[in-house]
Amino acid sequence: MQARVEFYMRQALELALRAEGDTFPNPLVGAVIVKNSKIIGRGFHKQAGGPHAEIYALKEAGPSARGATLFCTFEPCAHFGRTGPCADEIIRYGIKEVYVGMVDPNPITKGRGIERLRRHGIRVKAGILERDIAAINKPFIKAHALGLPLVTIKIAESLDGKIATRAGRSKWITSAASRSYAHDRRRFFDGIMAGIQTVLKDDPGLESACGVKRHRLTKIIVDSELKIPLTARLLDTKQPVIIAAVKKNKAKEEKLRRIGAEVVYTRPHRGRVSLKQLLRYLNKKELRSILVEGGAELTGSLLDERLADRAHVFIAPVFIGGRTALSSVGGRGVASPGSAVRLEDVLIKRSGEDILIEGGLKYR
Image (cartoon, rainbow, N blue to C red; front, side, top):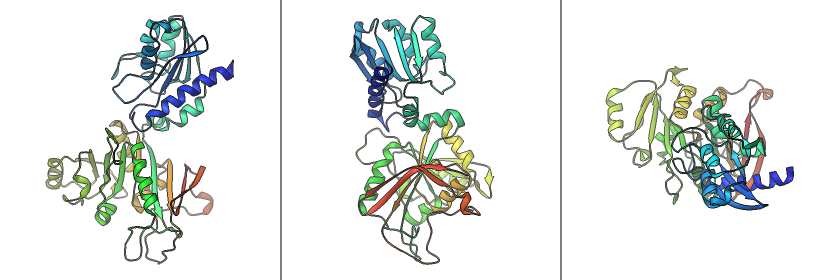
């Protein structure tokens, strides 16, 4: 019996993954409806504002849904948001039994969808493949648990940990294959962050992955003194731009607003932008997953303050050397190796000539 339940939930999980990168700020959710050991309805949530997975599955099943069993990776909602409550539709279609992968961590829904179904005589069991479902919805879960987005730092460095030569040149350390892969991965994030020094030195565009329709990638620049040039490439965009500062400059702020950028101020933290306050602000704007593309000080500060969650590190098979060549991580760092930030659940693979190391960050 348990194997059968997990089999159908796995089908729902695979459906959910079809929309990876498209549902922010909502979670990835899939659903299947089963009757007489046959799947008669399938669905997955495609984008925020569109129907939820259960609705697609119910419509495909039609009248045959009466007396059937629903397998849904996330708890059906019981409130009016961008769409109506799914729990009401499940009741209306006559579903007799519901298996839920995980309870929705959003306080608006948490437990209420399950409670409503049970009040109408529907049998509900929750916690099926919960760890697997939580793993694909880390940004959504962290947002509701801690009020912060999930932060991934991306580093492209040499074998000796350098991201630029002693002359300050950084193009290109890693291979074209790595750069293309890293650019394509932007579609799985809804915000991309960089420090002002990266903007001043490299003038990046920070655009979304090419050819990906409807992807809204907000650009976030950490710029304590509003030094960003009005001619910066990243400002010539259809994507939202947020510039975080500490030192107020009303004249520059007004010029930036006129070309479409949003300027926000945080309290100073060691004389710079408060990254935690900025991340809380981004979460309130429903930016759930942030990719940090540089530079060294921003990366180091996020690690120092334990605000980064994951790392993607591209390592090129070259030595750059030089005492003054820029290393990939700045900040204060740790006093002893035993206090170092470690990667866990490490994945290592080739990327062109380079090595890509991915993992979650574990703080001591």
